[in-house]
Length: 439
Ligand code: BGC
Image 1 (cartoon, rainbow, N blue to C red):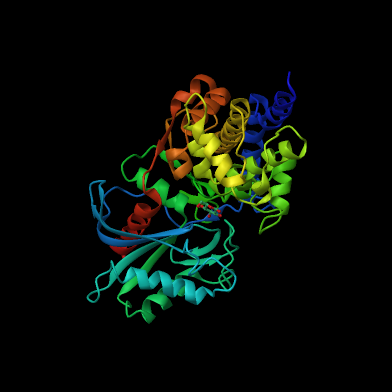
Image 2: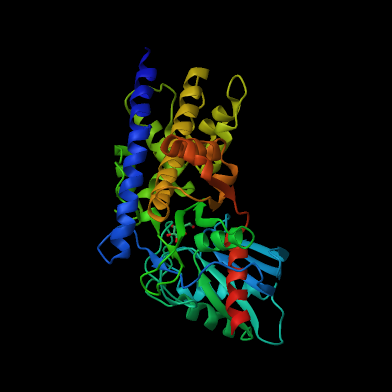
């Protein structure tokens, strides 16, 4: 074996998730869910949403704000009351300007400035005056909810740093910003997590949906708890599963965590979500350079987050003989310009291993939920997923399905994993219509 292949074999051994580990994670996840529900300390936050499953008959035209990452989406959505949601207008804008003109995710910005910026963008889509207009707000960060429109941010994730938002009531911050923009007739009716939105959107037409998840910049899952301890009724629970901490870490994961914004938090998310996958690959490759396995000059390999999930996607989609796209990415991101084809193959293989590990770890947590709500898998379950990793990363959905088969065998036929496109935004509209319709 030549030396780089030996280096790769070691990396492969660290990143592979065998079936025994999948089973172990699923069982630990199930136990952690039960601990958290019964009030024991746990890495799963298990936050109540105060939302159940929609009837499919919710209707009306509703504004939805989908805020959970660098891009905020404002949608005007018509629900027809027969399971159909139509996006009538849409505005997408970044919170961070690529040219460096502004960055609303930075610590130098206040919560008021952030929400004023979002409300300012809502003016372009919303009716300017008129009767009370319902708005649903997807806010995709861990929030302690006291009711459908009372949500307090516990802590930022996904490397957000905006000042003065942690511990605040997001509903009030948003409503005050709307009022300052002269949009007082728009009433923020509900605040939901994006996983809840994803579940609601799929459940609007398919009542077998009982798990919702985001596999995108961030990662999290929610599920329908059949008998919630607070209400003894079915309720969607936002597990904040990105914070799950019962998975063995590699040295690369530990290094990424040590240099991240929130040390020790969101450990699963840091192993699986789009925000971090490129950084894991970078850390692995920089290890290969340091150990002398890669000969190419690599001046920029030390720059944190210099590789993105989009880059990984392009690397995995490269089926050319000489792996041209892989070579271009290594050259442009890291100044690695003289990679031979074998070295390019190594980079692509590492990217694939990191992506497959992500999918297998996520699938294990979903199996944990299924073990809790239906241990015998006696009925059909749909897992609704939104997010760029699931939608666009080559091989991701296949890896998820394979892991499910590895864990559940034949019974995996009882589980459908499917895209809930734009679910996080549309779900906010469904949730708002549910509340507005009943008030
Ligand atoms: C947040 C979750 C969210 C997930 C996906 C995580 O960082 O903590 O609330 O659901 O990202 O957007």
